[in-house]
Length: 351
Image (cartoon, rainbow, N blue to C red; front, side, top):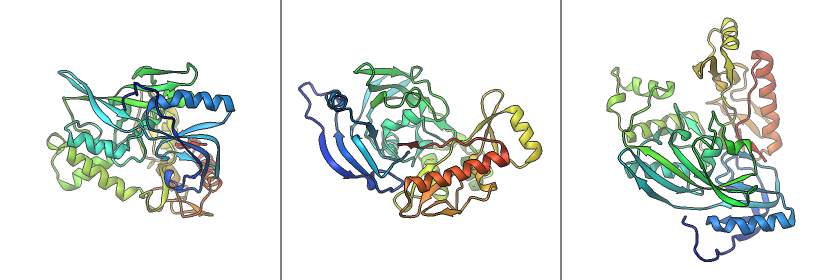
């Protein structure tokens, strides 16, 4: 993870690399030129080479939030920067520096075994650390932005490494400065801040129900981070398919945020509509509920389909292409728009 003091070894070039195992949808994809990035200092020279040859390029971590075409021309940077280490500690917080190529779920497990609670609600989210600030991943009432102190990245506009503070990252719901500026930043390290005064967060509907089913009492004050981690894993496993078994990218659509006025109008017409509080004057709708009500749960189109247990998830039944997935997504978007007047935004990045 530490930058090399001597000239770095050039990244390993692998021509025509098959990436089926490196994208959770399990799509048949070939990268014309794949470069394995194991340390940050490999990036500047490689980006110079990419510019000189005018190659198209992209970064691929765990491939958990992307829809890939059959061929990725130009250069594909495989983000494999590993390692995590405590960078600093004060009376209130512990700061953990993590390489962008570290597996996210494994990091969550590591933090708990090293007494750094906070990320337990984000267990079992597939992908790597470098992708987490880009998407501002979130689940069960927690967003990763709440624990990010800063992000180090190579800025292709400045041709230099930069460190962006939490404020600089401009985090929002499933959004960030990185996402708003595609192909500008290559995230290499993330500095996390873990408050020593940990508080359990189990009031999100699914978690609250899980613990309420176990006891009539309010368990929140007595729950441990490990118990919450275990509960999140159990709830997610019941609702979401394992990408190793059936290809998927988790939640395919963002929960749409509408004005209070639009929400009130929808409630008049659809009294059972599922929603959650958001910012003042806003309401977050459950995209899965909207899709389910439109009859898509369990529906199949060619080799793509909507998961039978969770309408928010599109799956690959074995031989789906990016076109199959996007055609199904378009049908869902058009139907929800027609029935509810609500726009569904696709969560994965389409390359």
